Amino acid sequence: MRASLVGPLVSAKVLKELLRVFPNLAMTTDTSCTTALHTAAGQGHTNVVNLLLETDSNLIKIARNNGKSVLHTAARMGHLEVVRSLSNKDPSSGFRTDKKGQTALHMAVKGQNEEIVLELIKPNPSVLSSEDNKGNTPLHIATRKGRIQIVRCLLSIEGINPNPINKAGETPLDIAEKFGTPELISLLTAAGASHSKDYGKPPNAAKQLKQTVSDIKHDVQSQLQQTRQTGVKVQKIAKRLKKLHISGLNNAINSATVVAVLIATVAFAAIFTVPGQYIQEKTKGSSVGEAHIAKQTPFVIFFISDSLALFISLAVVVVQTSVVVIEEKAKRQLVFVINKLMWLACLFISIAFISLTYVVVGSSQRWLAVCATLIGSSIMLTTIGSMCYCVVMHRLEEKKLRNIRRLESRSYSMSMASEPDILNSGNKRMYAL
Image 1 (cartoon, rainbow, N blue to C red):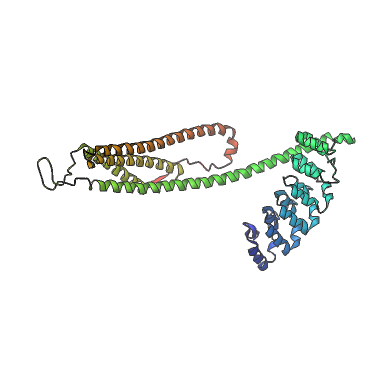
Image 2: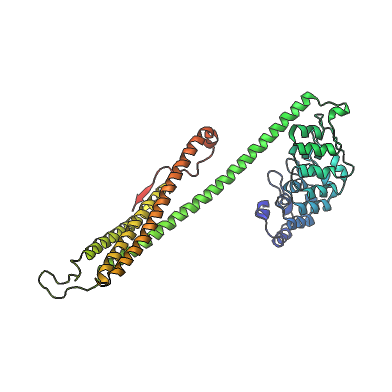
């Protein structure tokens, strides 16, 4: 029921009506104890958050299985208006901690939004000194994450301690020297930060090593999770691209069928509408029904070219209406063959037209036929030549990409084995009707 409420989120008006009909709907949780308020806050829907809080203000106190409250979620995702609404509704929510002992401010300093940090500090500045289970304050976390702007914002707050020491015996300056940049070190030093050894409390080597290993483990897990999420998104995009590609191939096949029928129709009709008409009475050296221009060379060229265009087009129509292609690779090959046949059909119908112009204009106006030849030849040869160039370049690029993938597959074979190859179009499946 919760998924139907906010995934995707409905409008505030519809949600209000749903809550009126189902008063307990807002309290419904999923397996991770996530409520509709968590989802709305994570997605930044301020109107929905306000409506849910008006329905039941206790929703703000419900934490997920990992202990994170709604304010944790909004602060980590960087939704300022949602954070402001939650803080105004329950100012004490800023001190609630998750299972790691971190407050919403610990979450906020991991991001880049200074306004959210200031908003969380506003109800009670003492939250700045709150420590997680490892003794890290928000300043420790911001320093470890390398958030220079956030560190500058925290240090600008009156009364902040620039030298808190965590359970590993580290101050923010100690962490900055291990993980930070020179700019971050200078910023902390200028604010009066110092090393833990300056306080006579050198960091415990064992605890420090344990802390470092824990941090590395946490970072690796985060990276792996992010990699998996990225992989899922890439697969979804690839599937959409594949659908678009197949749709484009289908459109190309349908268009080729229409053009083939059109060329076949023109070629068929052309043989019956030749200039000069036909011989009506039998004479020496000719037959009744024979075209007056039948013995001329241009007509012979026209007849052969027109016949080739007609039968090539009919062959394309027969293939298109008799073959069902299932696999994408086979569909691409079919489109490739049909496309080249249509090139030939267009070329031959052009030759038929040009040859017939030499008969139509007569010997006195032969220059018109020559002009038609030059214009037609230039356009057709340029077009087909350009298409051939594009095909060759595309094939060369595909070959280059295959070589690159072959080299990369050696280093990524393990990861590729765990993911389905959605672009694989292995066997050809064609069924003749």
